[in-house]
Image 1 (tube, rainbow, N blue to C red):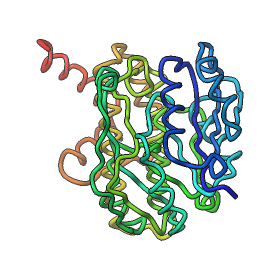
Image 2: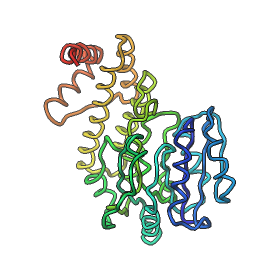
Image 3: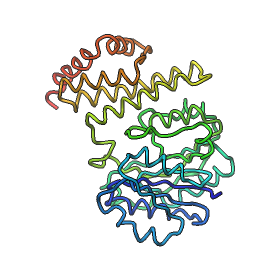
Image 4: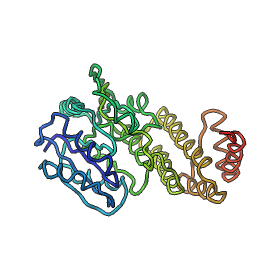
Length: 330
């Protein structure tokens, strides 16, 4: 077995994919100890042409070509094919910081941790184009249980899978996969990993540069399709409450985390969905994905829970009218 499989889903990122792939081979790793699995998710632009020479140069690169089935399916297919003890899943429009991966991988292999979670930098494309060499601070590791990681480090708004090394045997043992065909798949995936992990490492160390606010990216675009994906992600995360042996403390945080995702759904629906009937459809679909959705921490959550349970259409359209009045000058 090799140490690492790096899975890179590619879909219409011709402007960004080459720097991403080049950054993978600037980590001081022996090609014989890791593999790169590029999953071409039906790209219709020149993405694969932009990296054809890199693929030919390195014998440890494998390409999977599939029709456009979504990022989540691409990741699942890459994981299924992976031969590495650990898995890393960078986005194809982001970068690995030079020589940042090797010490994290060494620690993972040494400790056999289920998860090794690192830090990252966020930069726009403009900032990336003029940034200088990044200076790392002192590398420190802190061993944590999955429970500690869940309570201390899991931000429901930043469930980024690309900042973590996953032990493949851990994912297989707990049957953890991405939900096929949706965006926001990182949210239930990350929550499930943190809730089920035993031995984890939190590294104070920069691994990735996240390319922020790329026009047209999954995280900046929002549509009726996106609301359906986010509703499915909310439902899947909410359903983690049924895990065997989950404590009251975990349930409390899980409810708050789901409320954070729900608030994101409401905010984006109110500001980007102009159709009355479509806003109603969104609430109906959310209800189908999480029929027992209920929040109880504080008056705001209690009132919101009552409204979405008994008057969901009035809730979302009343919120829409309020937003139009409150922010009409913005």
